[in-house]
Length: 633
Image 1 (tube, rainbow, N blue to C red):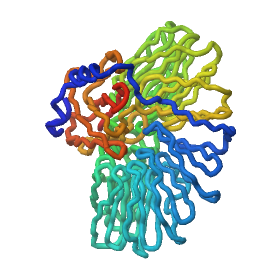
Image 2: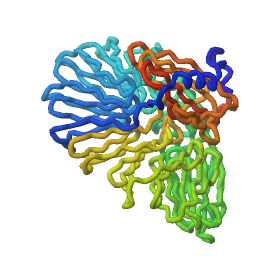
Image 3: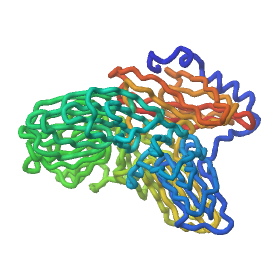
Image 4: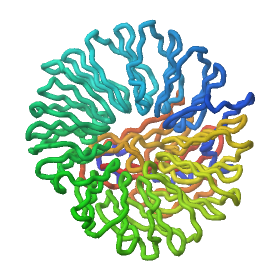
C-alpha cells in the first residue's frame, strides 16, 4: 500500500481496468518515446562543438545552439550571438548573450529569456558544474533560475547582501533577513533573525548562515530553517548534505536530509572521511560518525587514527594487526565487523568487498542491509567488478552479481562472460558472443539483448548511464529505468561520452543523444546516485507527457517478473497493494510534477516504491513507460 497520508483520490483506481480500456483503443503497437534522438548535421559534425553534462547534451552549429534534454528526449534549438558564452551544468544551460540571457532547464526544455543591463553578473562559481540553480545579480535585483523549474524569478537585492549557491541550494543574507532557495521548487523561504550573519554557505541540500555564535541551517529537501548554538571557537567541516562544527569538547551536526541538528560531547582531533552523506571524525576516544541519513552521531566505532577507506555512503575501517575490518554504513549508522585476515578491499556507495586471504574469494558487504556475505563457492578468487549498487564475479558457470538491496547473489549462467563497471557508477554490464546483459539492481535481475556483431564490445559507463558500441549499433542501458535500447549508426564514430544521466555519440554528420531515464522520473536517485529521498518530505515525480494526453500513474512495488501486455509493453508493478494516480497533462506541454507527502514513519525507510505510467496520447497508440523507483530513508 501507499502511505496513508496520500489523498483518497490517489488510492482507488485499478490499473488493470485502465489498461483494458487502453487496449480497446489501441489499433497499433505502443508508441513510447525513443531513448535515442538523432540530430542531423549535414555540414559535418565538430567534436569541440559538442558538449554536455548530467541530463543535457549541447551542440553549437555556427550560431545555432541545440540542447538535448534526456528527461524530455528532444533537442531544442535557438540562435545565439557570435560572442555569446554558454555555460552548462547537470540540469541547466545559461547563454550569456548581450542584453538578453537565456536559461534552459532540463525539466522544461524552453529557452527562457532574461533581459539584463550592463551590470549583470552571474554569481555561480565557475567550477561548480553540478549546480542546478543560476543566480544573477543585476542593478539591485537578484534573478534565479532552476533546472527543475525552468523559469526566471526576481527579488530585490540589497547592496550589503551575502550569498552562497551550490548544487540544489542557495542561501541569501540581507542584514537580518535570511532566505533559502531549493532548486526543486525554485522558491525562497525567508526567516528574520536577531543578528546579521557573518558567514553564509551552501552545498547539496544544506545551507547555513552563522554569526559565530548561533547558526541557522536550511534544508532544500524539507524547505525549512532550524537554529542551534555553535560550540565555542568551532571548526567547520562539510560536504553535500551535512555540516559539522566542533570545538574543544562539543560537536554540532546538521543534516539536510533530515532537516535537523544533533549534538554530541567529544574532543575531535581531525577528520578521517568526508563524503557526500557522512563524515568520520577522529576523537580522543575513537572514531565517531555523523550520518546525514540519520542526522545523528554514532560511535566510537574504532580506536583513534584507524585507517579508513570510504565512499559516498559507507567506509571500511581496518582493525589492528590485520585481524579484519569494520564496515560502516551511513544509511544505518552502524558498523558490521568481518573478523578475518583480508587482502584487497574496496567500497563504492553501498557495496564493498574484501578478499579472504585463506580462500582468495571475495566477501561482499551491503550497506543497505548491514551484512557481510561470502561469495558462492565457485566464484573465482579475484577482485570483483564493483559498482555503486552491485558487484560481479566470474564463476564456473559464467558469472554472478551481488545486489545490495537484499544482499542477494544472482547467477548468470553464460560461460565466457566479460564484465564492465566502475565504483563511481551504477550500471553493471556483461556480454558473451551472443548477448549483452545488464544487471538491474532495483529488481536484482539480469536483462539481456541480442548482440549486433561478433567483434569486441566498447562499453562506456558513467554514474547512471551505460552505452555499448557493438559493430555499427550503439546500445544504451539506464540504471534508473532498466531495459535496453539500440541505435544503428550510419557512419563511424567520431566521439562518444556517457554522462551522469545522458549519453552522446557523434558520427560524421550526426549527433545521437541517449536518455537512460524512465518516462516518469523521480528527483531522488539514491542508491544508484547521490540524491536521497527522506521520509517526512515530499516525494517528487516528473512526467513529461504530451499535452491533452490521458495518463494514469501506477504506484506500488516492482513485480518479480514483468507482465507483457500486447500492444502496450511490460507492466512491471505487482498487483498486490497497487494504487493509481490520474494525471492531467499541462495544456502548455510542460512536464507535470506530482508531489506525494511521505510520513516521517521509520517503517517506510528502506522500502522501495515503483511508479509506472500508462499513457494514451491524443494521436497514436497508448504505451507503458519504464518504471521509476524510489528508496526513501
